[in-house]
Length: 571
Image 1: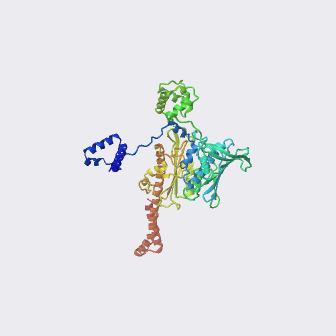
Image 2: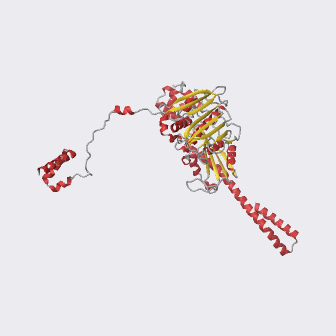
Image 3: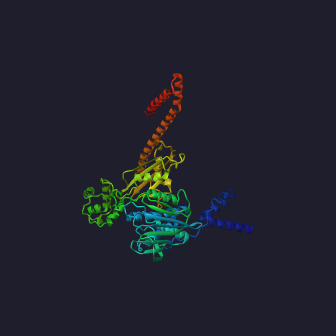
């Protein structure tokens, strides 16, 4: 009995420790009242309170010790899918795309008719060596390491003019991907005219976002000027849709002045000849438009400008702002024309910003854009599809967020290369570069779907691409294309852009509808003509028997009937 009582006491002590003093005294009180009420305080798994744990250390020094700055290359090394390297097939296409884009930009800026050599060689089951060479102006040895061995290093980000590259990420990101998957450096050979060629082996230090030069040597090179990039990467080659082959054809479509020599890993080498020797119009650099500058950016410009007063600041830092417009803007504020921009506080900047928004200012200049052209779009589509009909349209220049842009659209209809029971083929281009992925996330695709295609005699289900033997091409040219991600695969749905795309496609659609109606009329006429040719001889024989006509009169009667029916058919 004593042993049992002792164990019960230990249990009570444990419960008291578990529930605390208040619960222990409550249990003692219940014991005095009777055993019937004690059952209400039984401990179950549902109401059991967890045992107290040792408090965690909350020291600030411990947190600070673990915090460090993350470099941009380290971030993208872990998130390479943002740059278009999320699977082996796409990685190969992205690598070729970035290298070719750089080659074409370099040739266009130097006024050189581009010749690009692309070679892909399989080295292992899942590894390929990519080589892209151009006849551009070349790169100085001083600039080569930073261009190919640092992310976000380039000359295009701060310039407002049409160009294929924008961020300074592409080719260095391809080198980083090759380094991560094979451990091998990127090889760059470049030569500036009348200089020696240099060969670099470059790797990227992801911790510092700086290049690591493995070797640098002068070499003999056959090309008088140009650049050749070679890198090995983990990849997968395939033909057909979303392939390097399809991408290079679309590059030739958007850039008719380029000559491409392509050696695929499977099959024979091929050449895509240039369609014209005429270089596209040079895109001029412009200054930002005041309507496209946000308040925070305006404050930064006021701080960094070298202008001595606000009037000079408005005229020198922005496009389309004359002395008269500057005075009109400042008249809407309490600021003097002679006020120093550096002394303009936040309230003054906000007042200036609101005055700019309420002032009528001309749209930005359009010489910063270089469209493909209606004739070239039609010629390229007809060469690819051998269509029965083709139409193209270029919309007037429009503006979004102060950035000028224009939309070109073309439609090819009919022909043996199309299947009438399949959705249309849609080609999306941005600054002469094909967009190969994220089709349904793109403003171009959404705008094409929003068109009421039934009005143009084309079948379409709600919320889907139209079904017709047809190809639609849409090109946006802009000083800054609003891509949805760093991989540059889809365009953001700004209302101004979607509106212009829709208007351009609708205008082409009206021409297609006219062609379809004309085709139907011709088909109807041919049908009626076949009836005439089929039944007139029988009518002539019947008349000959009834009227006892000679063969000559029967033939004459048949001819007269044909003439009468042909005239009525044409009417």
